[in-house]
Length: 413
Image (cartoon, rainbow, N blue to C red; front, side, top):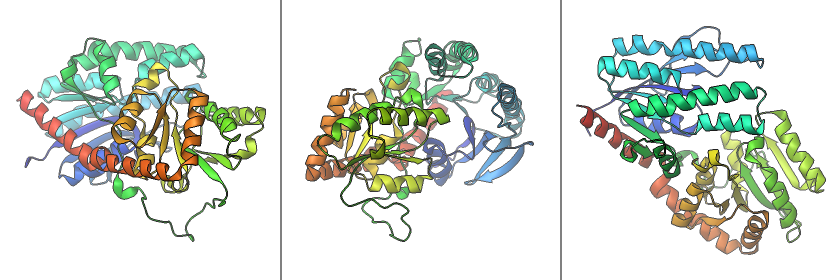
């Protein structure tokens, strides 16, 4: 397509955004195609005054924030975000946008609907996670400090999302085929939605290249077998599952180590895992790295013998598109994953690992199988990498998104 798009995107991601479906898909691939993007984002760091800046050849209108941990600070941060989102009116009036896109926000989506009607611009909504359902679930399991606020926000957002925002959107990007089916249950037409699964930027992923020993900050003992998990240690993810899996693997491979690369949302998340490891007397076999920059985190993945991607089978996680699974495969690592809709599909299509039920014995047996057969594990890693190159790199995904934008404009004209 020769036409270059002019997009306005308002996202729940903070500035500067780090999620690859924002920073790479839009900040690199869409910009590389010559499209112009303006962003309305709230600052991730302490910021007392809004400002305008350039980021990856995009113009970003950054809103002030309050990063305090008190309930008052959180409410003020939310209010600051709403006030900043009103900038949509002046920007749309001043600039000729082809599409207005809102990602994972609710109140501003109502403003975007109004603006799109006034200026006859297509409104697109991007939903990356079932946030209303997650808030309601947090209330049910009491995993939040303010459960009744979480319940209230979840119920309000659920009404806004399914009764107003999605019915009025010209198109909806969702995270997975499962999310598409889930949303259709609320009366949203299937042909109005397109799944955009998580991908990777292959230029950033180290593959078949040994790191410079001088730059490598980790040293893996030659006699150890590393089982690596990359991701959040948030208690709702139930990573204690992996502690119990390790306990079973150690019976066959005493040299096994579980490497947890990441951190929880609260200090208690990691303490919860350590207590479970102490209970089973395997704490000395678990390595907690804490939060690491991505390049450092990938050094642990590089040294992995097996990578794991467990997803606790609760409804709010069934529609996700796991990034870690694709990152493991992009690095040529064999994966053990549980029977989650997206993971099952990827493993079946790629041959890049073993998909098992969410069961400690099954998970442990699959890991043992790969540790017992390094050549099979290596072949799975190769197949996984081939799959990512063909279907899950953002250069490919951006073509799919770009084509959909042009279809939206054609239908709207």
